[in-house]
Amino acid sequence: MTVPNISESDMVAGLGTITFRLHDCRSLKGKRKIVKSIISRLRNNFNASVAEVGSNDIYQKAVIGFSLVGNNRKVINSKIDKIFNLAEELNLAEIIDSEMEIINL
Image (cartoon, rainbow, N blue to C red):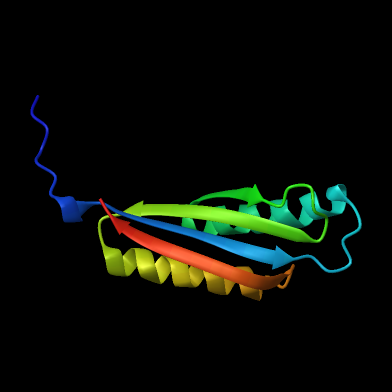
C-alpha cells in the first residue's frame, strides 16, 4: 500500500478562542449550563472540536477553544468567521475577546 504524497499546502488547521463574560452567573453550575450550550451548538453546526480551555473556576468568565481541519484556507477562514458570528448570535454571553490562527501544514 502506498501513501500518496501530501504537499505542504494540502492540510490547513484553523484554531481559535472566544472569551465570554457571563452576566448574572453566580455559580459554577450556572456557568456549566451556559458553556455546555455554547459548545454543543458550535460542535453541531460546524463539526468542529470545541472545549472550554480557560477560566474554569471563574463564574463570570469562560474561554472556549475550537479547531477545524481542512484542505482549503479560504473555507477554513470562512468557517471560523461563521463560528464567531454564531457565538455572538446565541446571546448566551457577551464576547469580550476572540483570537484565531490559520496554519498551513
